[in-house]
Length: 122
Image (cartoon, rainbow, N blue to C red; front, side, top):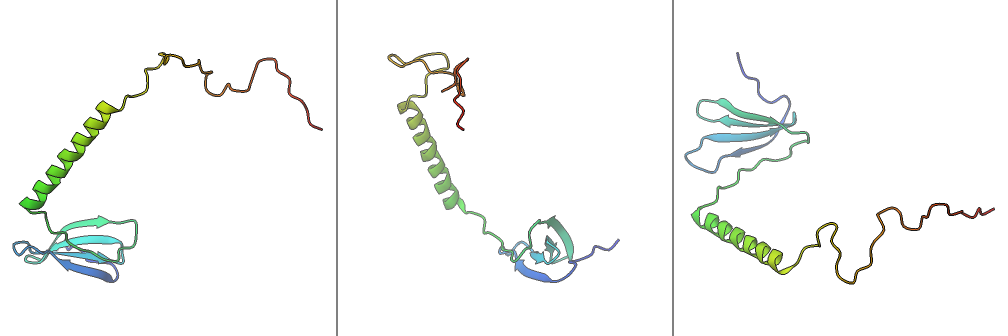
């Protein structure tokens, strides 16, 4: 069984940047992103996109330095979130009142009393 290629024109092509990878990505007017092996000329992947594709690009994988910087940034963000949670008190649990606070009416019942008559504007 022979695999069919793009149905219609191809809008963009991109070779994989790594020398040890022999991959080619294509974006077609048929809204498929295809990845092909350039050596054996076989299809490696095919993904349908709901939108028209106008380009394709390979991202360079992060090196060890970038990975370490990302890990450090994540640790700093986590520490900041923990500090903020310890410093800022949360709302009181449901059913508990803050000292000196007035009791609140249930939501949706403000301004309405049983048996009140509304005046008719006429």
